[in-house]
Image (cartoon, rainbow, N blue to C red):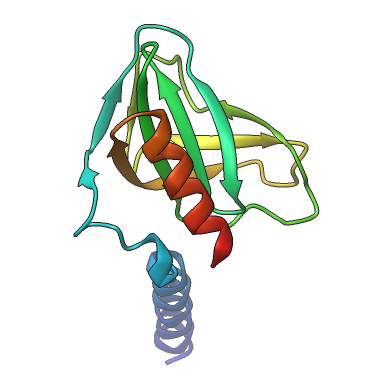
Length: 137
């Protein structure tokens, strides 16, 4: 009987831990741009990307000289880090939504920030418009 109780307790604990690990919070509505922008799953890069932080949960990336992308992170970067340095989880030949992560220096996060959405933008002016719009909200 004791073995059954211990086994049940371990099983319940395991289920609780797994359910917490799979719960994802919904992104704020301002990042739901699927009806306006072209969503892509992967970016292929030739030249080192240049980035600029839009707000605490999004970044605009310029790759291959004149291609602009909006990257929306699954969770926000802690607001106490202003103007952080960003890096990516692997060598920059491609960046894949849901797999690759953005790492922030300084930050207490050792796991980085998963890229939840990638949107292709139509150039520098469009990137500036999206940046201003997201900063207003």
